Amino acid sequence: MKKILIWSAASIVALLVLVQCKPNNEKTETLKPEQVVKENTNSHKVTVKEVLNANAYNYLLVTEGDKEFWIAVPKSDVKVGKTYTYEGGMEMKKFESKDLKRTFDSVFFVEGLTDPNPPAATETAIDPKKLTSSTQLSKGITLAKGGISIFDLFSTKDKLAGKTVILTGKVVKFMPEIMNKNWIHLQDGTSLNGFNDITITSLEKVKVDEIVTLKGKVVLNKDLGSGYKYDILIEDAVLVK
Image (cartoon, rainbow, N blue to C red):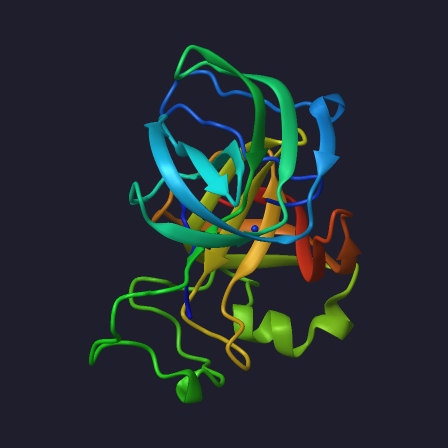
């Protein structure tokens, strides 16, 4: 089964409810903690009936058995009539989408969808057996002075707990204004046993595919509730020029 992580220009995090973001200098929609009324941690298999496209997210009218409801996922190519699966989700009551100029009675914000019938693998598909470890940085990425790679971070995380580190990499996911923080996923080409992505919280604004250097504190075994746990997380990061 090939998981389709549906990200815009992106892991929900911490009572994490996905929000819409507007590019450049447009305002963003911020979800407040008191808006969260219900969580659902079950597995779901849904069929898409309708797709509404906002700036950064898709709002999907789906059916599951005899139920019909709305979910929101980071924007990507979602097909009407196709069946997907997902885990968990946070329900928001009376949620207003400024992009769509519409208020939903109820909408579940979901981190990503999985296609149970993905396209056949191609010759360029990644071989899971090769997802071991790599210390090779991606082309165009150079560590900043005093910086470490994601391989270094994962391989020495116990020694780094509570310390401040500097990381340079490409932004592969950016989720703004979630619980008053921006959530960034960074990759630099290195990996440890297949782990090649680090989640970072920050007040800084970055763009997907942008190469940035961030400095933040290493936190281990972070439990944010609602089933979201992180073996390692970088908190309160700032951009290093």
